[in-house]
Image (cartoon, rainbow, N blue to C red; front, side, top):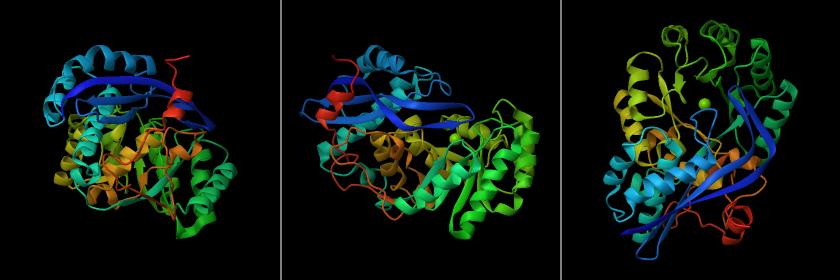
Length: 368
Ligand SMILES: [Mg+2]
């Protein structure tokens, strides 16, 4: 179970349709596949999706920090020393997806070594999750048309609507159009990616007061400290902290400071080890949890559903597990499938996927 090497392989896969939201847009998945090798010949894998406009990580930066900073501190430890691995990587501030991909690849290698599913090792609550689909910026009619397609093709009935544009009325018109089209057959919530001010946020939420929203996420900037507290006090739905709370300590600070009343867990950002810490914190405080999406590919989505299904709290709500549908291709031998609005955790050793060597050779950027 001794870790002998860690690889960081940059790869790129195009999106069929770019995803647009208040803090950026994505045309191409430029991710890093992290692979942990052991002296038993086992390889554990996970992916790091850089989000330069949110956390400052880039594809090249992730490769460099894994190869130059983290791998030398982790190689030589065993798969059972996950807390030592976490402690050593935590000395470096930031780099959330690089650390998380190493953490999850170690868990994948552990599951493969023990011949057990990681989801069962983590908690084993269920084997599936309901799926929530993110609707990126477009005109109201186009966003309704996309939702219709997603309902029809995949049976998904929960939508996170990206908001945070100006005029505010453009976004509220989208949410109203969705509610009018689908009635009470769908669940809706909104994510502003910090695009509005506190007062714009409250005005928008009041305009949508009759639309039965589940949550509001990151409507205004995290640095707007008093504005966020004021907003949380005035909203009648939980306000989810997402990019404002990327670590367990940030979640504590945001929630105890009254700036958030629910939390988004993203395995791409907190791996399995820190996601477990956030989960336990949320369970202890009685917070609502949404399993979020860091614009993950299929490897990242398999990680997310393995974690989400492991606990009652994370599987209670639909998880954001459908972003990969917009990607042109992926790296798995057996692609993930959303059926009747659900994604099932594969009951195979590890996280539940196999990397297709031919596809990796096609999409990797570090070899000619
Ligand atoms: Mg968000």
